[in-house]
Every structure is written in structure tokens, then in C-alpha cells.
Length: 79
Image 1 (cartoon, rainbow, N blue to C red):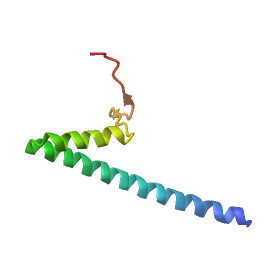
Image 2 (tube, rainbow, N blue to C red):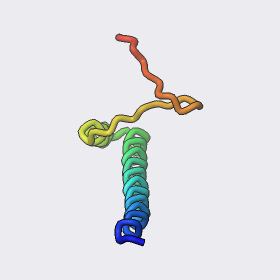
Image 3 (cartoon, rainbow, N blue to C red):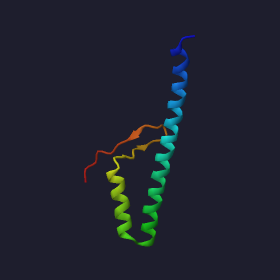
């Protein structure tokens, strides 16, 4: 067994673990931010809502909507 055959599977495992941890952290941060915005809205704190929404807009994340078959739902209607 060559060195490549030994290291590639362990590298893939480490990469998958790191990716799972990064996704979980990103999801937790997103969930916390959404809760913060909702709490500000419930309390009537417009400034808190604005700051939270601004943070989501500046983060570069785009929340796409998915159907039950996991197809991306797009809307091309212009208001």
C-alpha cells in the first residue's frame, strides 16, 4: 500500500468532519441571528431589527427556498 493510498482516505475523512463542523457553526450563527431579529421585532425595537437585517444582507448569504423535492423556487415577478 502506497503512501497516497493511506493518506487520501484519512484526508477525506478529516475534510468531511471539518465541513460538517463549519456547516453546523454557520447554521447555529444563522439561527441565533434570526432569533435576535425576531426578539427585536416582538419587543418593538426597530433599531435591533435593522441591525440584524443589515447583518444578514452584508453576510453574503442568500437564503434560497426549496420545494418538497428540493428544487430551488425562484420568483421572477417584478413589483
